[in-house]
Image (cartoon, rainbow, N blue to C red; front, side, top):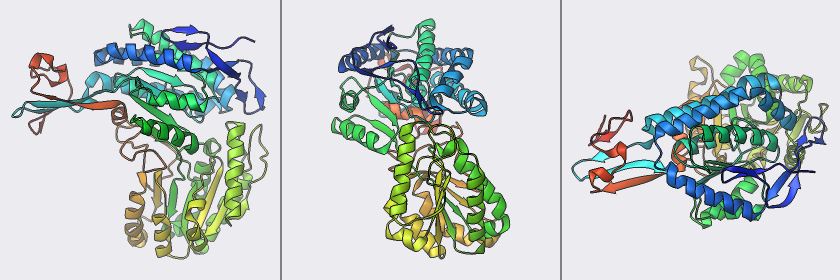
Length: 520
């Protein structure tokens, strides 16, 4: 059976492979027809050489030209939307509408066009000029970027088209995309669209390259290689930390998105007033996409009381009555069962679920746990075990002080939400809890579930460890996300003609510059 080719050094070619694999249709548990190579170091070495050569050209390429490539790529995706959506459906079992065709694909093209606008304006470079000392600085491209994509967003976080890809390219770096093994066919189609756009806009060979899979040792070797500028990774904590250990040992930047339980606090005043509506909102958010979102609300903190008991009963009934969706893969199903086993062994009470699901293919029953605040505080680390999927844990605190103690034990998270009454009934409680939660999360929400992630310049899709590997960066939000794949370059007494255009006195572009303390 023939293998799919890798994209290396400007051509689709046969892989120097160590093995092969096939993707599965999660809804049927059957292997799909296409066979993909597991690349040896030879593939990676050739890709790194080509990326290094491309970078020599890209770092001198204008933002306008890079923008033309990103915009052409977005147009190519739209032209191939039907084939992309069908392939993604087969490989992930995610619904065509609204998820893939109406939400995620437009988000992906929108990200690419926002990245193009950032490349064209140059504002992300943050140019600073100190005339008195003749010192100038700006951010510039860092070098070839390796992108490891996750399984849960086949378009918007894809290694060959998603947010990390768009940010790295917009900053002037070539990308080596490592496909997620759950959707290699989708990634190949996106890489074809990107490669065609790179050729039509005259981008250097090696701007976009694709390998499907490597073993762990080769992955570690890639992120430490001297030709690599930085790496973006979204996936499991274990694999991500292994890559981080390797990259840190070599002094190479790596930006990780690992795990998050995204705590939601519902204060008593609002729960008393809107119990049923909140139960519906929470159940919908938790079960959306079978819970397979980075920002799925996996832990809820409530204060003991009659409204809390009514809320838990209402949510339990909604979980039991909701259809059970298909998980992304057998690995996700296995991991969810493992997390449930850990939580049950730690003493949580099962409100519903944990068993085999009644849906198609890989699935687990919609699961809701509860535990008292006192029991939670005896083992908060275990209680924060991420159950990636259609599952959540409710922690019932005896009072506000115990709720504050619970939040104080939280690991870093992408998001944290506090629901409170519009009147003053919950204001004192909010003032007590919000400062604690604020330091634990990248994005603080009020009266809103965390599931949606807007592609906004003000968005922070990041947070303290273990949500990410560094609390100062975001994976979503342009131009902020570009800084991950850039280096700060200072020019001291450098002759005017040798300066980057954006730092020259006669610069005529549109970027905002800080000149002698004044933005201009």
